[in-house]
Amino acid sequence: MTDGSGIEAGPGDRPGDDLEIWKVALRRHWALLLVILVGTVLGAYVTVQFVLVELFETKASVLVKLGRENTELPATVQKGAVLTGGVRREELNSVIQLLSSRSLVTEVVDRIGLQAFRAPPLVPHTLQQKVTHWIRGTLRWAREQVAEGLIAVGLGRRLTEREQLILAIEGSLSVAAERESDVISVRLRFPDPDVSVHVLNMLLELYLDRHVQVRRDLGLKDVFGGHVVARKREVEQIDTAREEVKAKFNLVSIAEQRTLLLRQLDAVKGEIEANEMKKATLDSQRAIMRARLASLPDELRQSQSINPNPSVQARKDRLAVLQQERARLATHYLPDSQVIQNVDREIAALTELLSKEAPTLVGAVTFQANPLKASFVQSIEESGVQIAGLAVSIQQLRGRIGEIEDQLKLLNEGEVRLKELERQRQIAEESYLAYVKRMEESLVAEELDRRRIVNISVLSPPVRAISPVYPKKLFIVGLSFPIGLLIGVSLALVVEYMSDVIRTPQDLVRMRGITYLGAFRT
Image 1 (cartoon, rainbow, N blue to C red):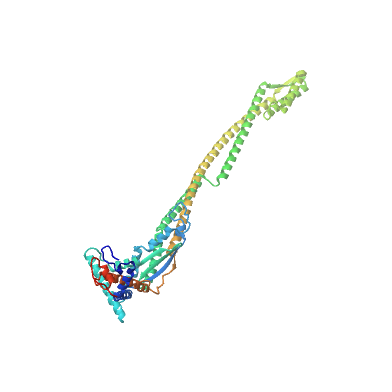
Image 2 (tube, one colour):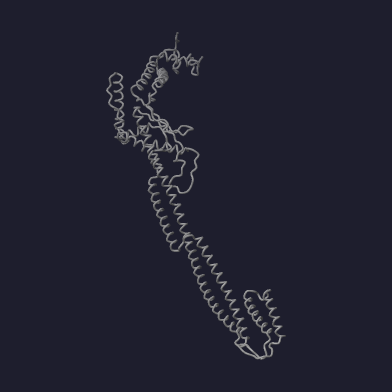
C-alpha cells in the first residue's frame, strides 16, 4: 500500500497501531514512569506527613426554640398583637449572623488572650520530628518572606498577631442551619483541639450574653417606674380634689340627697297649695258674710205690745243658720252638689213659709242689738286674720322652695364635677395599672435576662475532637497513585513523541517526506 505521497505505508499508519505505540512507549520509558509514580506518591506522603498541618474540627449545636423573644409582645409596643407560627427562617439567619460576626470573634480572642493560642515550643527528638520541624519552619519562613515582599510592593498589609488570629478563626469558623430543623451547627477547625473547644465554649457564652443584650430593652424599668410614680401622684391629686368637691357641695349620697330634696319640694308645694285653697275658702266666706251683713238690721225688736209670731222668728233663725251653713259648705262643695242643693231647697222652703206667715202678733215691742250681725262681724275679723296668716305662710313656703331649688342646683353642679373627676380618676387609674403591669413585665424580663433565660439553648456542647479531619492522609496518598500514573504515562508519551531515534518501522513511517531504501527485519 502507498499513501498520497507515493511512500509505502508501514504498519504504524494502520488504525490499530496506536495501542502498539503506547505499549512501545511504556516499554521504553518504564523507568521514567516508575520514577514519576514513586515521586508523586512520595511527594504526597511528605506533604501530608510533614507539610500540611493537622486540623481538628470541634462541633457544637444550638437549638432555636419558641420563647418570649418571638411570641410575646415587646414591652415598648403600646397597641397591637404578635402572631407566630413557629421559628422563622429569618430568626435562624439572625442567630447565624450574630454567631459568625467578626465582633463576636474579636471579643472571643480578647477574652481568651493571645497567649492561649501560642503553642509551646516543641523540641524535636526523633528524626521524623526533626524533619517535620525543619520543613515547617522553612515553609513558615518562606511565607513570611512572601508576605514581606507583598507588603514592600504595596500589595499586602502588615497584620498584628491579634488580627491574624481573628482572621484565622473567622475563616475556619462555619455556622449553618441544619436542614428541616431549628438546629444550628457551629464548627471550628483548629490545629489544637483543646483550644478549639475553649474557643467554641467562649463563643457560645458570649453569644448568649450578646443575644440577651440585643433583645433587651434598656431603661424600660426606669421609664415605666417614672410613669407609675407620676400616675400614682395624679390619682392622689384627683382623690384630693374629689374630697374637696364633696366638702364644698356637701355630697354624701347624691341619689338619697336628691330624693330627700325632691320630697321636701313636693311637700312644700303641697302645703302651699293647701294654704292657698284654705285662703280662697276664707276669702269666699268673708265675702258672703260681708254681703249678708249689709242686709242685716242693726237692732231687733225685743218686745212689742203685739207679740211677734214665734214661728216666724224661729224660722228666721233657722234660715240664718242655714244661710251660714250654706256659706260654710260653699267653701267645700260645688254649687251644683247635692248638699248645697238640699240646703238651698230648705232655705227656699223656709223663705216661702216666712212670706206666708204673719211676722208679728200684736203686743208691746222692745228693741235690742242684732246678735247675728255681731257674730258676722266677729267672723269677718277672724277670717281676715287667718287670711293674713296664710299669706305670710305661703310667702315663707315659697322662699323655702327657692332654697330647695338652689340646693338641687348645687347638688347637680357638684355631681357633674364629681363625675368629671371620677372619669379622670378612672383614666389615671387605668394608666397607672397599665404602667405597673409594664413595669412588672420589664422587671421579669430583666430578671430573665440576668439569668440568661432565652429561646436559645446549647443542644450539644463542643467536645474535644479525637482525630483530625484535615488532611485526609489516606485519601491523598491513595489519590496520588492514579495521579502519578497519569502523569508518568503522559510524560512517557510526550518523551516518545519528541524522540528523534528510529528504532522500529513505525518510527520510520511516521517520518513523512523521507525516501528510504531497504527494509527492517524483525
